Length: 304
Image (cartoon, rainbow, N blue to C red; front, side, top):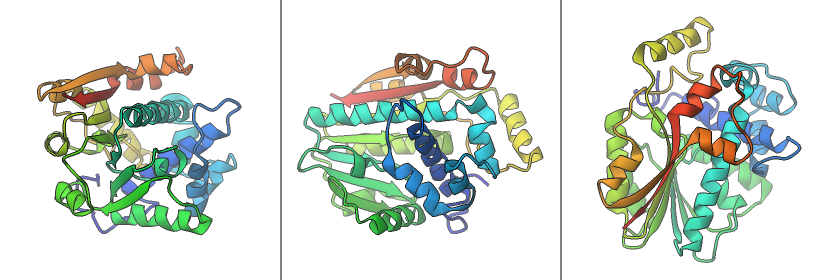
C-alpha cells in the first residue's frame, strides 16, 4: 500500500512512510562514515540506532533486512548514499542562500528525520515549521530530547497529513503568509499522485509573499510498463514497500514550468550535472543509477 492510500493509522517509524525517513537517514549516516563526506549529519546515525534492528545493523556494516540490502548492495548499485549526500548538500546550500537574502521563515514539508533545525547555523529570529505525520515527528522529538539538544531556531512541529488541510494547520501554528518564506520538498513529490502535487504547489504559491523561495526534487515519470515491472520485481523478491511499491509514477508538470507560469523565477538543475559538480559523478557502468539521475532534477525558484 502506498502513502497515498488509506493507511493513516497503520504504520510507525519502521514501516511504510516511516521507513522511508529512516532509509534516507541511514544514507546520511553512512555518508558521514566516508573519509571525505559531502555533508555531516550527526543525528542520522542516532536516529537509526534508536530505531534498532536492521537500521542499527547498517551502522555497523551489517545489512540484515531488505532496506539495508537495497541501500548497500541493490538498486542504484550502491550509489544511493552518494545520491542522498549530494541532495542534502544542495538543499543545505539553498537554505544558506535564503537566509543570506533575509528570509527568516522556513517550511519543511514532509520533514521526516530532517535535522536541519538542529545542525545548521540559523540567523536570529528564524522560525522553522516542520510538517509531517504525528508518529514521525514524535519519534524525532523523543530521540533528540534524550540527547538534551536544542534547535538553533524557533522550531515548530505541525503534525498533519499532507492530504489534509495542511495550509490551515500551518497558519494555526503561527505561520505568517505576509513575509517571505523558504519552502522545501525534499524527496516528497514521488510519493504524491499528480493531483496532490498540484494541490501542494498551489498551497505553497498561495501562502508565499513576494521574495519567497521554494526548492524541490522531482523526477520525470518512467515508461509505465517499466515502472510496473519494477514494482513486480519488489513483490517477487518479498520487498514490497521498499521503493517502487510505495511511489507514484506521475508528475503534474515540471516544477520550473508550474511555478514559472505563476510569477516565480525558477532554476532547474539536472541531478546528473549536480552530482558531477560536487565530485560524485555517476559510475559509467551503473545500469540503475544512471537512468535515475538522468530523469531527476533539483529545482529552486524565487517569487517575484
